[in-house]
Length: 120
Length: 110
Image (cartoon, rainbow over all chains, first blue to last red; front, side, top):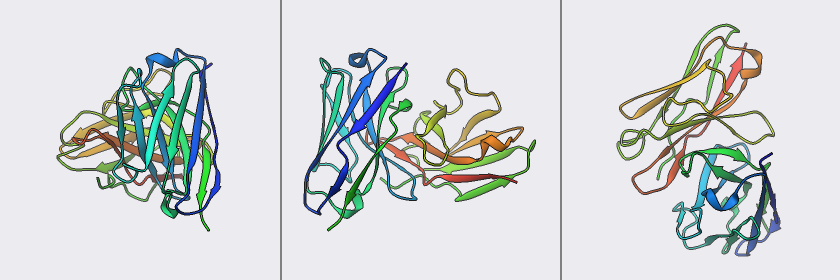
């Protein structure tokens, strides 16, 4: 069974840093592109970032470019999102998601989500 | 990259058909056949129900279908059921090599 489990969320002050992690199991992690998608309270979904299966390329939404860094460890089946210079508008539930059919164009499995709150 | 435009809410009675629109630009929906739709029940993760404009993942009911015309994509749900009541989100690949989502549409089954 495919499982994605996010961890590392919590409360952080504006300007602070935090790392989110996503542990994957039940599939061959190293053959899938992976992404983070977030959802602010009561709002729609927002794509955050994607990393290719081999970790060779990363892509970011303009809203996080230069502040967030996505990486992966295929030996540990782990995805990590390093977030710096956090802003109140980064407050959201962050979902780890698996790319469908060898792409990052859509997502067939999602984690349960982890809440990040940026507030003083 | 601006979000795609979806109606905030739609409603329908059991057995009816409804359509949810998703409007973008010539740099996203209009340029690529990479529109996806997700169903999200409260407090849960989204579920992929349509990809590549009109393809359904294995296990998704054929009551869900998708189409596209110009810069607007549509999700059609036929034979509405109570369990279809949820939030629906569209997304598209963009010319900037990013993904953009819509604001979400709440479907109420009357």
